[in-house]
Image (tube, rainbow, N blue to C red):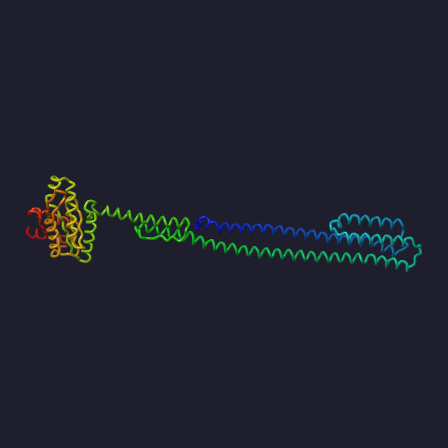
Length: 430
């Protein structure tokens, strides 16, 4: 299955972005949760404060009644009625302000019932004779305490319940915050792991193939057409690697064809003058370094212009091919033959002195002279003249060797053609 390189590189980023979005949403939710918890705690504290104020106000309202019972002579109907009117007004205010917010109907009912009982008790007490005894007063005070004691207990229980709920809310908020911290830490670890995985995936699927492609392009630029680009995937980079390998093979074929065209003569198939000059320079370098002797021979076809004038240039080209084949087949494997230009050829015999070169070149001359050229009804033989220069005796530079081989060839032409002449022999005669 082919997986796109874009998908491979974007997939970790998509996952990482999803995790970051999830963490952001979680942080927003936890922030809202903390705000809700703070708001609930504030409301609870307001409710507790309201109940405390209610308790203080009720005790503050009932305290004058207590002292009124302590001093029966001070009791009068108008004062009692005013006191209860004030009490019920305060109760109404507390109901509308504090208890409605608390939404605690039971506590409100207990307070209403208690105040009603106290009012009835005081009404009965006021209907007693004015000369009520201390026992009667004590009895009324005990009844009053019996009414107030459950109310105070109810307030205390409410306080304990509210404080317990506040504590539970705090614990729940801490647990949620702790859960958020754990979740955030886990998400952070996941992000780090995803980032590491992404870097590894990025390194494996993108960086390494790109480096391999870079090395391949460097190798191709340096002329190493044998270099193979590894194809490790079926994505776009794999396609590029395959294309580079195909391009390398094409460049290799093209380079071989261009090299052949640049170094070989298209007519005879022999190496051309450029190849001869490069090979001669290499032999000169070897001679300077290792003192290796070699021979340069310049070959010319005798009376070649007559062939072109008599039979035409196509036959002349065929004669060039005929003589080139004879020379190539007559030489040793270590020797090399070149077409120097026109009807001239050159031969290089490396690590060869004149004693070994002269018989080899004479064999070539004799093979050409004794082999018939046949082209349809045309049949004739041609001869060649050869001039030889030996390095280092004849010279140690390119120009010297070529010039002296050419002078030896000129001497062979003057001696009647179809012969081999050595430059050193001409020099001795001169």
